[in-house]
Image (cartoon, rainbow, N blue to C red; front, side, top):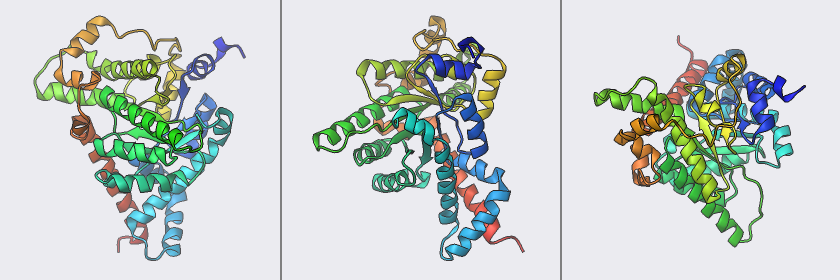
Length: 357
């Protein structure tokens, strides 16, 4: 087959350094995404809950088995065991890509419990535990001041890291620097060198969402469509900074709201991680897989965005200090969604092991 005959996603994978990951650990979706060229997958509490809820024929009997095997476990322990098993199964599907890439790709992300977000030591301990579930596991830790300290320590201990709860250039740069420190510390201490495949997520669509809410709350009118470029602008800028500084981690584009969050990043040495339905739509609509990573956002669009103080906080390298990361609007909104998904998973398990009378 000629490269020109490939679907959009596969063509980008075949002709550029940009790689595709699937934004779900659901095994059926992941198999289909691998057929599109996916070489990795990401997951979070919302996605994990959705995948377990979507397949009751699998998970209801399994949760009952787990409850019988572990009679002292509560709802949270049982639910998180299901998340671990879901992740291990998905990781097995990615083993060929892991072997072929020497560990740079073929990774399955599992996220630390969002209820631990204030405790760096607990995040490190869980990251180490999760990293031992499979050789190709990569662990998500939130990009807050507490989480970045945990990332550096976990990475030093040999955990592959994916930063989450991350929406901005200052967050990405702070994480990239922390991972460099961890790699340098490992080298200084004579620890084995290996390919960790570290990635630093920017949830571009969630940045767009927050700016739309912020402008509405502040009664600020912007040109229609301009805010759909905010996440793209942040992702392009972060990629440029990582390239310039030689960071050994890669930017990852997540939280898709439009196809620009893939198409405008093609050509970069980075990861794009759309939900499977977005992948299907990109292919169905034959979105061009042109090299656009170094094509700037249109000057008039960027200028209008930069008139917004909240965008400047997200776009400029020093737009926020690490102490401000956890209080950024998108971070608070998303953390609450992650915590709610944990509560929903607890409730799902409760309905299985203590069904209504």
